[in-house]
Amino acid sequence: MNDDPIVIIGGGFGGVYTAQELLKRGYSVLLISETNYFTFTPLLHEVATGSLLAHDIIFEYESFFQSNHLRYIRGRASRIDRARKTVWVNGEEFGYSYLVVATGSTTNFFNVQGVEHAYALKDVEDAILLKKAIITHAQGINHHVAVTVVGGGPTGVELIFDVARMLEELKGKDSSVDYTLQIIQASDVFCRIESDGVQAYIRKAMDHMQITPVCGAYAEVIHPDRIETTVGDYRSDVTVMASGVRPNTDVFAEDLSLDERGHVPVNAGLQTIEDEHLFALGDIIAVDGKPIPKLAQTATRQALVVAENIHRHQTGEKLEAYNLEVLGTMFSLGYGDGVGIIYGYTIKGVLAWYLWRTVYLFKTPGAANKLRVAFSWTMDLFQGRNLTEL
Image (tube, rainbow, N blue to C red):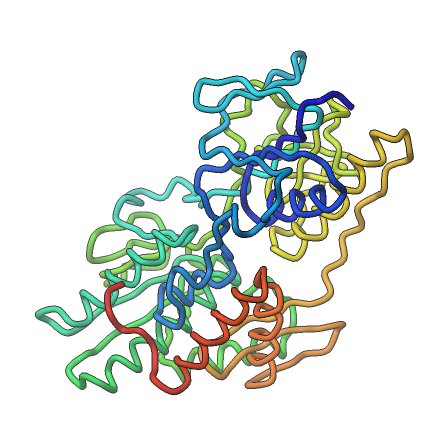
């Protein structure tokens, strides 16, 4: 291997955990990210609804790694020159021995008109803006807010339930506050789980929290105060697009061969088809032509494989094959409630919610950060949510 570092583009789950594994092996790593911190994205909806503060789920790279073998550059990669084994960032060229692309995903708006009037939930800035919008409307002149979430996947479902809990708590402090909630879903299945028991439980929880499910519908036009769908119009002061994501690979369209959906094709070893010194992982890949579930747990597992295979490629060994294994899925349905399937068994209620929180607490990087999140959750238990605009 030459003296150039292993360059990783992207500071999300895939990039950060790959860097962590490579640093353990003594490799020099150059991490390129558009922010100077790692965001624990599975908990963004809790920031948007006051259970956690922004600083509870973001971790500065320098303190996260604490390694002399890591160099970090804040910037956006604009070009990959595979012939020269270089990557361009902020107008400068950096050499690499191996390149790892882990640029994640962006919100897929599916050509919906008026998305400039909608909110997304991809980073802490989105979460803070969303929270402020909901509270501002709820405490405005009319003391009423209509919130619509477009998309009934895990992000959309967890968000709408936490919004319901936040507004319920706000109404408990100010009885003049009123609200309506709806979730728009293209199918009649929520959270992508084909289980009658899970679906029935989610529907029952929605009914209890006064969330209106609008199934078999697509968003067409978003206005500042309403949303047009294929089954009718709904009042909506705050509309959130959680309808799905697409690979964040547009900038590399001329440098890498992408499939029709923008995924980077990789083999079973997560090595790109066209370049043995280039690996990819996370939301952007298609393994042997098949997209992979876009989950934090799959990205962290792939990071182990990428780090191992870079080492094996350098030493001339056979690459390890990545095996997709989703051990289970759990979802929060707001404070004290949840549902999920683990090893084929359905778990519901407070137990599912407790396990969901426990899993994410242990996935939070660093002992100090775990304590910080646990403390915030404990304060939430005794003092309630942070219902300020920040």
